[in-house]
Image (cartoon, rainbow, N blue to C red; front, side, top):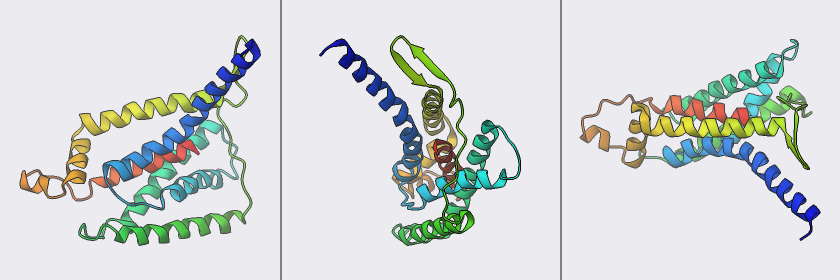
Length: 210
């Protein structure tokens, strides 16, 4: 392998890691919903995309910096995620876990149709943070927007671990997901809607990845 091939290989690995951070943010949401809470939510991707489009539509007539659009997308993601939980999960008995399969399929189709009709089926350009920043380290180039997403993914992962293992909400969530009747047997006073905050956080993080 000559020097140019070595440079191309290192550059490809760096680009792969930075691009992969986008999928890592989505994976954090999947981890919370599918892995921690053991819920089937087929509307997860549609909710994150809907949050991204909602932030653009809200600010369509207002000139706003990309950072504001980015934060608004996270807020919209949390709101849509909470709505998905309320409509598709809140009133379904725990004895029928597969019922959420059908309810979230319906929400998936509903959100997709709302997006299509609102945008007339035309993709919208989403502003990127630090898109004009290029860091050059010798023969290597690192994009600023991808480095920002990578740093954000690392921060979100740390916050996720802290939430699950350092807070009462995380402890209760893991206990209920592993054995729903265990907290009652242990006389733990857990709110019945405890998964709603995690649901909002999951969708909020995914919308930031968009």
